[in-house]
Length: 266
Image (cartoon, rainbow, N blue to C red; front, top):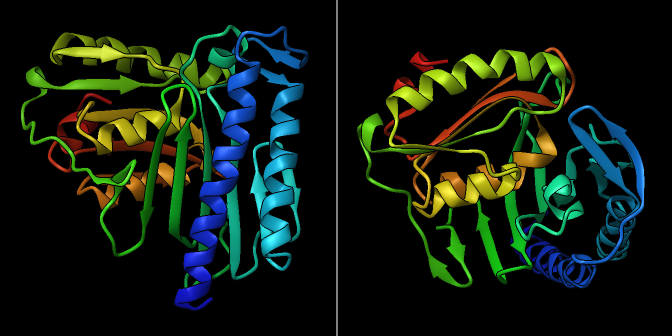
């Protein structure tokens, strides 16, 4: 994909995110059909409908590129290029009318020396759109991250006792059990801990200095692919370790100054 094609992909991703975001905004305070519910997560019919809308937009522009999404896969996601999509990041919030959720779209390229592992990709562009406050977070690899066209950068916080840290508990009983002790240790050492319910927004908020760090164990690639690039392009650090379960990570996202301190409490 050449420079012009990447620019076109960037534009298509933003347009799709805005289109789906406008659709979700209208649905925020409506009654929603739950297709599946587990102890710590739900799936809405609107999750699937929103992903279909994104798929239509992306496939119309780039029919040859696979889509790896939270609500399903189109094509072969191990090819050289792939979209990584979360149509509603923050579904539980959205299901209750809490206006803290977003649309996340990333475009990834397989690394030159890849050996077939699902994580051997570089994110080339990332788009995260929060329709409830009309915030469009974007980045292209090698360029500065932007929020609604304005350059953003991470905080300069260096001490844990001055840091606001977000933590997520993922979706399984195992990850909840594993992360509770981390929460308690963080709570005793940092200025404030926040549980916000949207990984992509935790990443972009860290990118803009609203948060200083975000910690989660068991997060999925579609939750953080776009936000991870935005964070890096804002001067932050997107540290992640692939886990045994496919497409999941242990994650520490920071302003680039706090990872070791956060890791020690993990």
